[in-house]
Length: 242
Image 1 (cartoon, rainbow, N blue to C red):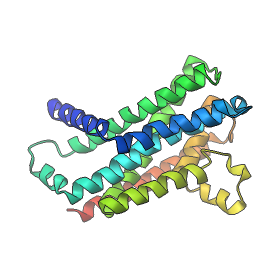
Image 2 (cartoon, rainbow, N blue to C red):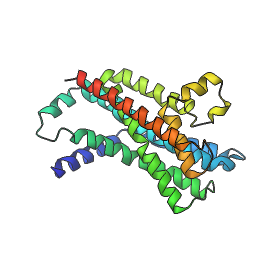
Image 3 (cartoon, helix red, strand yellow):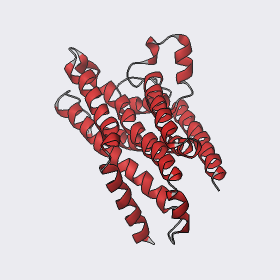
């Protein structure tokens, strides 16, 4: 049983590592943007801890949305998921493998951002805060994995890539990952309230002590509610394929 899961995880990681069109936008862009906004721009180091918290969420969004959204859509169109059902392997092996691969890939980007923050941007946090922030960022992948899964089951391969791109950039901008929502028009601030990216970023900011709102419980409850809705959407989309 364990060998089946390990084999699926190994295959998934190997597949993603051989896809430069996946690696460049999801791994390199978050690090580049954080370096630009947190190190290179004059005076940006004053906000580096804030950006570390928000860009950490940005770093896990890409692998989750593209790995599941575009990846599942392509596999579905090619008949790979249908073939998988006939293989004598645990039904959950593919989902576990994709989730694990997503976390591993996202961790590479997170590690690079953390390194830039610590050694180039001068961010100083206690070991406990670093670990707490890492935990928040890794867990932040869950709602985006579920949303990506729903996209992959609903849209075709080409459409899934386009929709994933829109969702990726839209939730990054409107969720306040690049700039605080306090500078947005009122309507954009209201949109942020229903986005997982906004609430997860606020939780990360609370953990790092870099700013954000102090009502962490409200953001945690909102993130859990959005995750539950995303899980429901993923289950409905999956049920349509059966």
